[in-house]
Length: 169
Image (cartoon, rainbow, N blue to C red; front, side):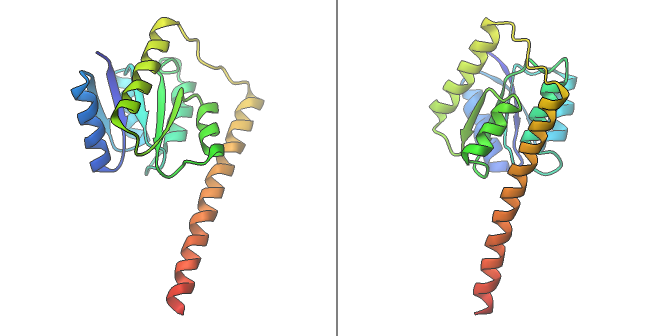
């Protein structure tokens, strides 16, 4: 089957994905953050990458952006898989950065396998050239990326302030 790179910082989620994919006959390589994933992908190109979005060191959005900017990796399909970044704007950003699918955790194993099989079939049936982004397009993506991160941080700060206020009472 296919060689799939799993990028997930949470051990339980990573182990579950690994088990599902191995049972489906895929060869699996796992990393815990985007920086390690990028290094692993450059060392031994996977057929597909499935990555969490919120991770330490390098998040899934940046991993996606860097893979699509890399000549040897830009044709590798990437599936973003997140429980934190689930808003429509966040999903749109992931797709604009080059992900072929955006799934919300947790997803039923069959839905996950169907998305993986679809992405692999599309990649195999066509020689995708990948998107080459001119500088203005790249700047637009970076602005969207920053806006998504700012909104997520703002939400977390509001939640933290609410918790502080409740504890003061």
